Image (cartoon, rainbow over all chains, first blue to last red; front, side, top):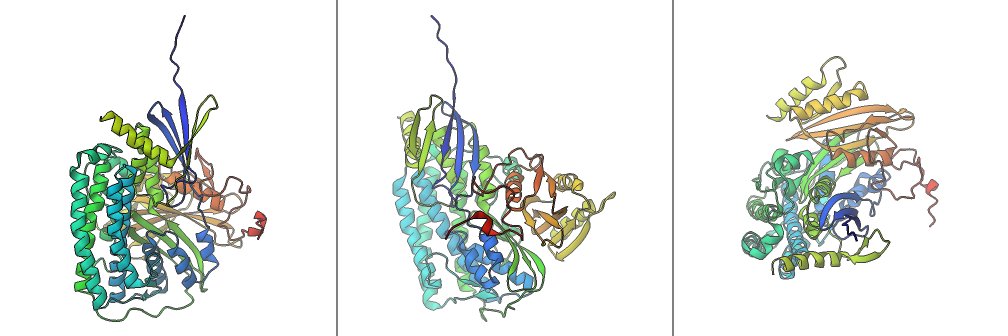
Length: 398
Length: 157
C-alpha cells in the first residue's frame, strides 16, 4: 500500500463587501497550508464616479462633492481642492484662513489616528484598547463639531478661505481636550511599545524595508515606518505649514510595531502644532474674493492626509465648472504594498497587515468564502477570520 | 537637492537629444514635459528614477474633447516640493502607451484605471482586468471621455 502527500493550494476570496477599506475591496489570497503565497486586489465596489460628477458641477458644488470622497479624512480633500482651485484662479487665502485649515487638518489627523488605533486593536483582539481609544476620540469629534458645526464632513473650507473662526471659548475647549488626549496617547504609546502580548501580533510582522517601501510607492505613516522621510507637510508646505512647521516622525524597523509607533508619535506633533496655532493665530480676514469663472489653466495640489500624500490634478476651461478633476488617494498607493507584504505570512496575520496601512474602514462584517478543490465551500465572515487570527496566536503561545 | 536643482536636473534629462521634450513651467515647483513620442516615456521615466528625481505619484488621463483628436496621459513624478509631469499625446482612435509597471509596480493600478476610464491601451500590461468599474460594464464605453453618454448604460430610474 502506498501513501502520498499531495499539496493543495487554496484560494481564499475576501470581500467584496469588506470592512477593511473605505471602498469595499475584494482580495484573493492563495494559501499553501497557513502561508499566503499570492494575493490579488479588486477595487471599485464603491466607485461613485465623483471625478465625472465634478465635471458637471460648478467649482463651489464640486467642493462639497469632493469633501465626501472620504468620511474620515474629508477636510484634506476639501483643502487639496480649495488650494488647487485658488492656484488656478491666482487667489491666495488670507493667513488666518490658512492657519485654521492647518488647525482643522491636525485635529482631523488626531481623530483619524485614534480611530485607526481602535480598529487595529480590535483586529488584534484588544477590544479594551479599541473602546478606550474610541471613547477618547469623541473628545476630538466634539471639538470639531464645536468649531465647524459638523462631526464629519466639517465643511470648514470655502474656495478662497474658511467659513469658521476660532474664538476664545473654542480655544479653551480645544486646549483642554488636547491636554487630556496627550496624556492618554502617552499611555497608548506605552501599550503598543511595551505590552508583550500586543507585540506578539506586531513585532516583526509585515516588515517592509525602506527600499521596498520606496519601490512600491508607499506614502504617509506606512512609508515613514519603513524609514522613508516622505511627508508633504515638510517636503512641500501648503496652507500654513511653512509658518507652523511639523517635524517628521519616522521609524526604522518597517514592521507593524513601527507603524503603530509612528502614528502615535505623530499625534504628539499634532498636539504641539494645535497649541502653537492657537497661540499664534494670525489676525485678519477669513476669506479672499474668488471669481465664479476660472480662466483655462492646470494645477497640481498635494496635501498630507492622515494616510499619506493626497494628490489632486485640476484643469479649468474658462467656465464656472471644472474641465477635469483627478483624485489620487493615499490608500491606493499603500494597497500595492499589502498585496506584496502578505506573501510569505501566516493567514492569521492578514487582518493585521491590512489594517497596518490604515485603509479606511466601514463598519460591517462581511462574507469570506473558503473554497476547496473538492467543491466544498465554507463561509467565513471577516469576523471569523479575525477570530481565527486571535485564536491562532492564543494557541501557539499557550 | 532643492526644488530648483531638481527641476534643472530633470530638464537636462528631458531635453536630451535626439527628441527633446517641450518643457514648460506653470508654477515655480511644477514642470511639464510634453514628450515628442511615446517611445521616449520608458527611457525618460527610467532616467528620472535612476537620478532619484522623483517617484510616480499619479497618472492622469485627459480628454481635451473630440475636436482636439487626441487623448493626453500625464505621469506625475514628485520629488520633495517639485512635481515633474511627463505628458504623452496619443490619437483618440488608437490611444496606446507603453506600461511603466515593469519598472514601477504602483503604475499598474494607475494604468488599469486609465485603461478602463479612458480606453487607453497599455502595451505590455499583464493584468488588464477591471479595477474600479463593474464586471458587466459594456466594452468600449469609457466614462471619463468627454463624449461618454450615460444613456448607453440603460440605467433605469
